[in-house]
Length: 110
Image 1 (cartoon, rainbow, N blue to C red):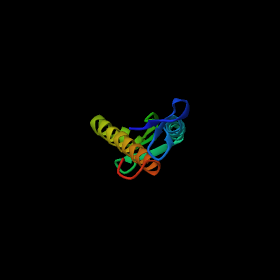
Image 2: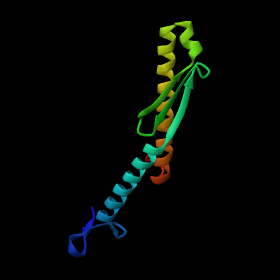
Image 3: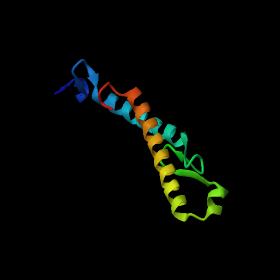
Image 4: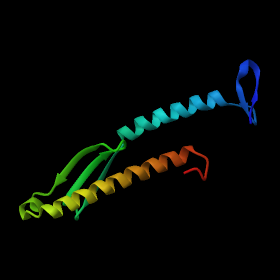
C-alpha cells in the first residue's frame, strides 16, 4: 500500500497525498450535488399528453396532463402515461449524472 511520509501523511505511489485526494473528492461530490439539484429535465409520454419536469436530485417539479386526455376519462391510460413520463424523466436524470461523472472519473469506472 502507501507509505507514511512526514507528519504521518499517507502517501500513495507517485507521491500523491491520500488526505488531499479525499478532500478533493468531497468537494467534487458537493459540487455535483449542487449541479444536479439545479438540473431540470423534461420528459413526455403519449405524444406530449403527459409531461414531467424532474430535478437532478429526482424530485418531481411538475406534471402536466392534457385536458383532452382528462376529457376522455380513461383513468388507466392517464396513470400509464404518467408512469411512462416519470420513468423517462428518471432515465434522463441518470444519463445526465452518468455523463457528468464520466467526465470526472478515469475511463472504465462508469
